[in-house]
Length: 86
Image 1 (cartoon, rainbow, N blue to C red):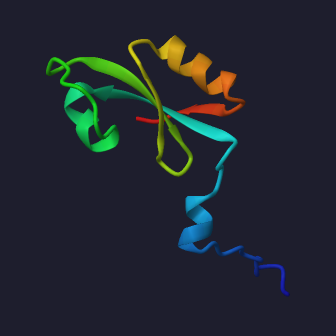
Image 2 (image 1 turned 180 degrees about the vertical axis):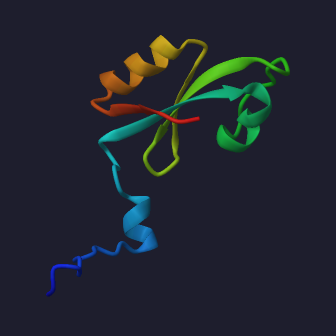
Image 3 (image 1 turned 60 degrees about the horizontal axis):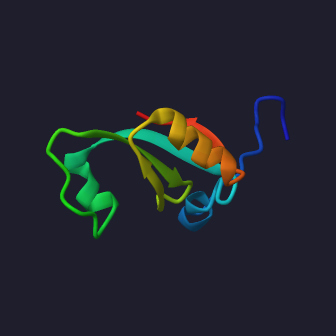
């Protein structure tokens, strides 16, 4: 290997999907209009309501709350490292 060559690790889509699984939780402010697709079976919530959602690294919903602090606490309580997404 020369000085300009780099060793690269290539992840498959399946490996990428599981990256951070069991260790990372994503916190996102979510509008009630987005809930149906992400939280199937949710009861009706007033349009425009802002909530905080916690998702597993693979996108699986974990928790829904009305306060960022509660979302953060829920992630930490489940031994997950919280990361904010926009």
